[in-house]
Image (cartoon, rainbow over the protein chains, first blue to last red):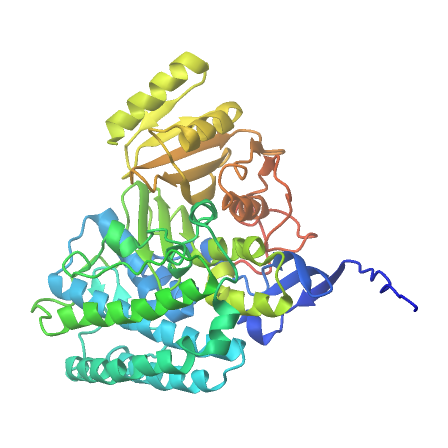
Length: 372
Length: 158
């Protein structure tokens, strides 16, 4: 009888480009992959395709103008970005805004978070081949955009918060429509779970993939749902509350598994928490001014001012160095996206290319936030 | 730990170990600031990361600044166990070939952020595994976030 042994299959490493135009990179991000067959050996992001040098532009802009540039960083958290700059400027001026401003800002921020997570959830499903989720996510996100449009006039780049308050007061329909949305979304969010979370195929793509330990999460500066999926308590809203967040009670969404599924579930839990925060505030929006008068030309005192906020993606830091003029001497945006992207190589090496797409979706990358 | 306690612990540790110029300040900032010379930066950072009373395990911001003529780097640190915060600053007087030790062996997040500083300020970080531009192309001339950077075509000065 003849016995044959299978010839040893040799493989060698090679490079492949993913992007800059690739649907799964959610924008113009180029990844240089070193692969051996289907196994990923290295993932190197190549950045800068849409770098607009916002930090340099800020050095010659007034503080009111800077707020508008922040919309264009993480465009899905635009209100929270606006708020971050406003808070930094107000802290520097020692300007105490009214409770009304704080409460409206927080409600807007949480609506932004839900709308961002809706979009992420839709695209997340699409990345792993479930096209229906995209329509579900966009359907519900549209309702929030309509609320934004009525009050701010804009659906995406809101420009609603300004140093010293808000651009306009809320629309008379605002409270009614937000309440309607909450009622609607409470019936829809369980559908998300039935459609995707509990799906066996989806779970097989997620559970145990893209593992990130708590120590690594801290070392890589992970924040937002990426950090919290690894059991790292990093919610800025809890640790350094701002606006009206110290007046509401909510639990930080924490899971310890550290895999893609944990990061996914944290975002679903966050949507419930955001709804709870809005419900606590929406019936009791205090009376008061929606805008305080500031000087037409805002000059910050000499010094350094840092403010962090929790966007839908994680910790956004605004660091202003002022020399006392109308523009900052140096302004740094510590974006959550850049730090979260830096750990992509760490959690995907050794896995398959298909898993890279799924894992990247759970990191929830918005490229303009990374490139700034 | 309060700012005073932090300051005392760091100062006493340094007294025994090294002769370095530490300057503490809280003026014009909500954090305690420590300024140190470039030669001792890495030793201070290792101490801050490893020491059991310090445990600054989270580097949440790394900023390059052009103080003209000096260049500078500002590190924002936080401890996730104690929740105390600290700012470490260095100034580099050599504008032609600014060099400083990398801290990416202590905090993995420094890898990308140091490359960003190199990209925009031209500060080279020693012992960094890949000291290349992060955003701009390799053949870009100059360092755009420096105050003396000129680009007559694309820059509008107000």
